Image 1 (cartoon, rainbow, N blue to C red):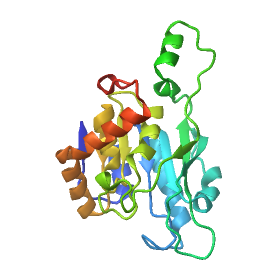
Image 2 (cartoon, rainbow, N blue to C red):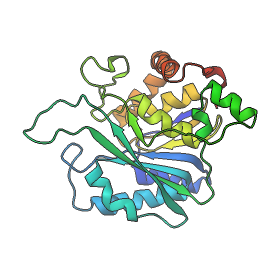
Image 3 (cartoon, rainbow, N blue to C red):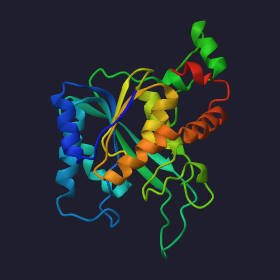
Image 4 (spheres, rainbow, N blue to C red):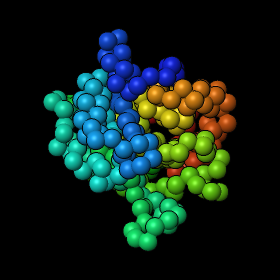
Length: 252
């Protein structure tokens, strides 16, 4: 089940979720990066630390997105009961150059996990590896790399999934995060959902989700996107290419 909540501030969403006694297998936090788009505020660090703490209180796994230089100070801001699991990198080549200097080709994502929270690297095994695992012959669990490669949705690239949201990430960037930390039927929380990319992934992978955003326009767009179903087919084609021997009807 995908639940799209009325527009609300991320803090209010997390506090309400906690007050309801609910817990998510994973929470995705993708705030503005305090570099112009979305605004620049002096108390950004305090905002991130508080938001991260609230998310960790209700989640086994929390993913926090940002540019590397924005996220670096928060490596040591781990809430009690959680630890830094990984520094993930989303690498893309197709960011247009608009300055005379270094051209950004990456985003970073900090993955925090609660003590004892389970990961599922076996969800990334191919058919041959799954067979070896079943026979007790898989010598090690390979798991996915900490660098996720996918082009930006810009211009003709990713046009079939473009929503118009200024900070939209490709579905194939969020999909490994959900696949690594959840099983079918688990709950994913995205209190800064933008145009609903997390919801589309959860629909296809048979996860439950609670989605919200502070902007009512994007909450409405999220509902329309999920009801349309067109982008579901886009993601299924992408996953068929990424995992050619996987049966999406039995995704785990």
